Length: 272
Image (cartoon, rainbow, N blue to C red; front, side):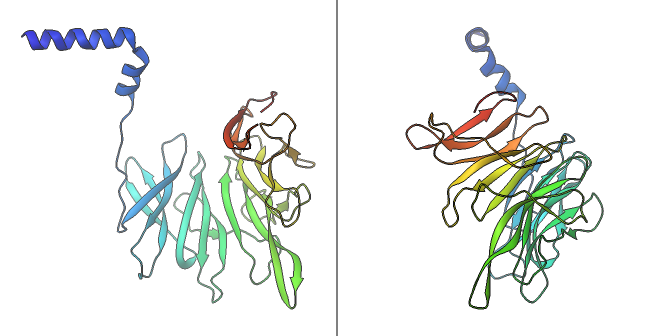
């Protein structure tokens, strides 16, 4: 009886001294989503309906390297298949159940391409910026209107008879539309990582050709991409914008005054 009273007193003291810790401890728990027939799994995206997407990894030497999955509370983990190749990844699922990601195709050249998969419908290949052999794309995010962002290759040079490709940040206005090249800040490469329900896009773009000097960008839905700067007072350094919400708040990482990478949040209408 004495031990029980002591425990009750201890819990009451913890609640008074650390109320947030007690609430957090009682409000969250882990759920094992499983691995299907694989050996490990990774959850990458979740929507407001608590539908989760990611991928499962398989043992080396098998027919499949990895496969995208959809997890729901009612049905558990379900395979999403591929576009005919040995792997697929799922990065984002919209609130109406559209999943986007990347898959290897069954073509002889083993091309890697972005895909769009509505709920309970087959996976479909996203159109390329320039449909040439050796080019590929990746779809990173989708909003509730069906707009998709990621990157698609285009030729930035030729060495001998071999095309040199660069990743270009793009937006697909729908799953069958030709992607729109959002441009860079002068470099060869760019990637769009996220889009919100207003059609605002964030990502990263190179400043100088041949140099990995990426800067975080913001695209309001038209016109040119805008440089978000860094955490340094002089504005120099590197930065990447990884995500944003429907309020226009942006998160990512950027160089600080010590030239170290540090997480940032840029609230709508304010500086990084």
